[in-house]
Length: 375
Image 1 (cartoon, rainbow, N blue to C red):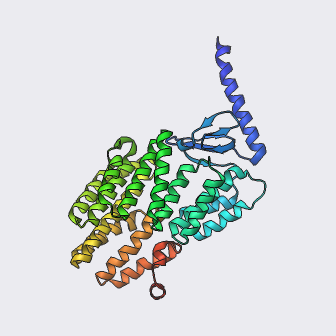
Image 2: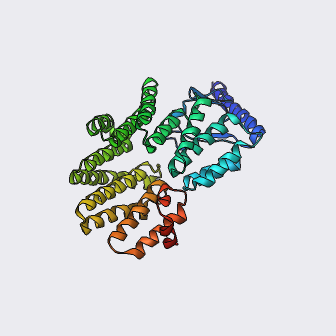
Image 3: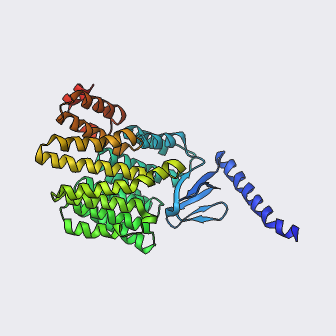
């Protein structure tokens, strides 16, 4: 009986050793697959990358949307550097690394090229340096790899690129395509993301009633599973009120959301469970700052500028790990300091913006005269 029980264990160990041998012979290290929410990765050799499942040498299959990240064993240094530069907001340098990585021989092109195209599209999008290139890069990705595991990510990013270019009809079409795909495949989180961006698109079109109705598809979702998306949708809801001129209602909702987020942020920091709620908190504080800025534009009340400044400074001081939100907060906090006649403090923040995020859309908002002044 004891021998029979040990046989499956021996089979598992033998399979693991075989996987390791195949991976080591190919790249010196196996791929590491991180399922969403898992504390430890699954070690395997990926031999195909499609939306239908990532196949491995061990015969196991993983749904791409259930994967948090993949560390490829043969990821070239250029690709790793590209990701590092992208995550730190150095988008122009990141693109160069990704372009270099795609030219390398002896790597598995089936994963490397679509991954590089996706990140390059994001670089153009996040920096707003070339929205036409963002659209083309993401369109090429979807055309060349229609079943890539980056499919939902690319659809969302392409919609965002159209939205940034104020092509609302095309943007909405991409978000709607993602919503239908996600619904058909029971990818609930992706469906909620699609609805969130549909609501944001309608907000920019000033279709406020339809925007609120669409956002309610997200705000009514299970907060224990999708708390970050629920809060982001409520943040967009608050922005609707601000755009309609109801600043008090918008600010009250944002402050309520920030109070709700606090314990979740503390939990993330204490147990190292991620940074999703921390980024959501940064977005809420930036939205609150925008609310008071718009109110100040109407009232020219210094107190409104001070409230806006406090909100942006929260992100400036505590959330520098998020380049997009941090660059926004630096720029608008500097604007608040200028309005409050504290120009030296404004210059400090503009210096930091230009130093840390030279490729950001906020750095490019500065005219040459302002750049010279900041330097």
